[in-house]
Image (cartoon, rainbow, N blue to C red; front, side):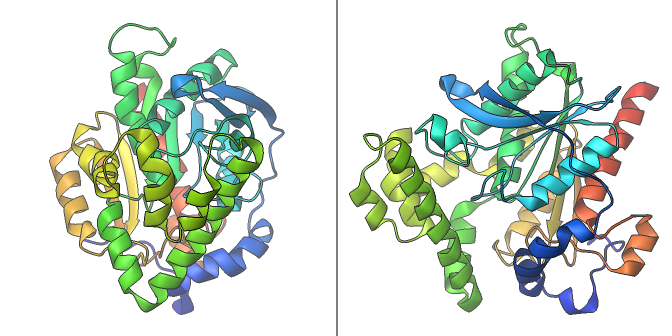
Amino acid sequence: MPDPKYTPPLFLRNGMAMTLYTALSASRTWEKTILEQEPVYQERVFTGAGGVPIFGIVAIPENPKGTIVGTYGITGSLDNQWFLRILGRKAFAQGYAVVLFDWRAHGKTVELSPSLTSDGLYEGEDFVRIASVAKTMGCPAPFWFTGYSLGGQLALWAVKAAHELTRDGNQLGLHSDDIGGAAVICPSLDSTRSLSYLVRDRFGRHLEQAITRELIKLAWRIYEYHPTEIDPAAIERANSIWGFDHELVIKRLGFPSVEAYYEASSGLHILPHLNKPTLILYAIDDPMFDPSIVADLQLAAADNRNIDLLLTRYGGHVGYISSKGSQQLAGDPDPWWAWNRILQWCDRQLTITNDR
């Protein structure tokens, strides 16, 4: 059943309205809505899977109680992903060390490497290797992996990768107990279904094309910094999200088709394998994803006791702006309901661990 505790303002009780309002309006006013200040971050270049350099920023408060490692969705960079920076502010103020990073082919990472995205196949290991280095910098366990939209899928892959990388010895300096788990917002779970759904919808087609334009900008940035590593003609041919992956991604990863790539990287398929506490916030009215995924997500969560599914009637795609009444009910100081629930959940997991 949908969670009854979250309610948005009346004018945002529609998934598309919430999604557009968050992207177009809240993105300009968010700093007025929170009390927490930006932490003083130090820059760091981490080494991810296959030796790929990953750009990140790190902030460590006094006596940190754990570490949040996070990234963003399908497009963007640390410079403009304000929704992720809200998490950084709130987590740091609540005593967590914070590690945020530009994932493959994004932000400053694209300046360091021509490696393209893999939707979790390599990014999961990137998360774990970043946590390993962060530990040497003074960021303490437990490490919580987080992200939203496609970044949420990457964080789910991180839990799976952590299990594989920590079970056979201690080569990364991480133990299994160092990994707290994951907490994600509106994760991508089935790209094949959702992209087909998106392009069939009148408004969804506009969203898909807006994302495609950002992906094309991303590809041209790779070409700018690494002109011998990417074919400009292939960039010109990529006129959709599907086309981007067909022209630029699948050949490098060794997949015969986009369908095979999406099947292999599917977040839905790895849910049964998650062996750490995992919180998934998911809105039924998310306009980016095929509604049929909700039933599959519910079944997967019911079959894996490590998954806490917080399913809401409203919320849109990575919106979750709460009404004043919802804020009062939850005891929240601001409208950022999803991040407040994630940090509250992480605190609860710490209490459970300490009580054992």
